[in-house]
Amino acid sequence: KLLLKRLSKGEPPPKTMPLTAQHSDGSSFDAIMEFAQATFEGERCLQVVFRQKTIDAEAIKELDELRTRDHASGLFNRQHFLAELDDVVAAAANGKKHQAVLLIDIDSYGALLNEIGLGEADALLNAAARRMESALGKNALAARFADHSFGVLLGESNFVATRDTAEAIRAAFEGQILHVGRRSLTASVSIGGVQIGEKIASSPQVLAKAGQALQSVGALGGNRLEIFDPAAKDRAEEERVLERIRQVEEALNSNGFVMHYQPIISLHGDEGECYEVLLRMQLENGDLVPPLGFLPEAESQGLTERVDRWVIGRTIAQLVERKKMGKNTRLIVNITTESLLDQRLPALIRDQLAKADIDGERLILEIPESKCVTHLEQAQRFQRDINKFGSSLSLEQFGSSGNSFQLLAHIDANYLRIDRSLMGDLAKNSENQKKVREIADRARDLGKKTIAEFVQDAASMTVLFTSSVNFVCGNFLAPAGPSMNYDFSQ
Image (cartoon, rainbow, N blue to C red; front, side, top):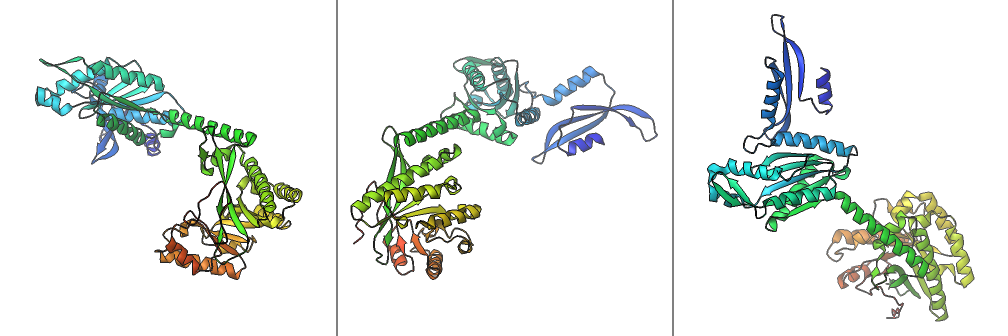
């Protein structure tokens, strides 16, 4: 009963369990229960065999060998291989490293059978199995996995060792004579493998990855190998992140950022000009990286506050230059969550504006609606603080949730940038047209100004002209660029 309870909880069974049983007349006898992984109607199950113990231990061992062996290849059979794989995967999930699985396929198997005849199929498998085993070390378990493919489990094998083992197997076949009965032939193999780790710790996932690698090399003509290593991918990603962080820090220290500007155009002839500030990071080779290419990495290292301060400082400097040119310019700057939570930032902006002799109304600070919802108190405080020196708050991605207008009961935002998901195919999507008009009408009644972004075509402009939307922007109207040279008088 205790064993069955443990099995019901998913614990692996023992291979055998000795016990004392009773006949119907009450007399007792020695018995044994044997357990093996099996399949029933395509589903994996646990096979339990109960028998009277009438043979000695050596005979039991021989029976165990017969039950787990494939008679054609002499290797372990598929059921035993899968059971062992489950144990290996479970160990990986608990942190054990340096384990791998290989799937080996005999190339052009059908053509080889046509050459030697179907009667020699078992002999071919046996010869291939012996050749494969000659390239394996002591920490390997080999099995017949499918019709003409083998599986190998490797213990104490890091990626380099796994790759070397796979190469040794491949080289053992390439150009070498294989004796099959009275025939001599050459054969090659394709090998797909996986390093088993915590991030790929399920048997179906491991076999799927190994199968994909096997198919990949087979499609290239065979006689190749491919080993999937999740850790190598992680290392490469870690190196990429570290390099990006280095580039961000370098850009902060040497003014390596570049600001582009996209005009925000009034549909109703409002005076003045308005641009959205878009940040780019310039690499050493001159390439420009958009925000999504570096801000996630900067955020992971707590650098976004410094990036925001750099942008705000440069934006105020640009407002000074526009004022000298006699331009009545407003600039919209998007800030990150880290800056929203920084209680010192509003005072810093206030002091910089005062020092530059720039009215606060020239600077509009923008936050995604979702960030305000999840940091409501901080967003309220931020909005109140920037309103004190004349700056306004804009909510980006407005209308993306079902309760966007409820947020306005708590956040007194002056501008609402309509979520771009509502702008896709606007001219043909009547449902989106209805939502945009509803947002614009409600915003107008509340004294808020709306911005429709991502305008893609003239037909969408026609729809927006007939709505209450105040401002529009998008590449169709004017793409972003390093200069503020849009003619707002046209």
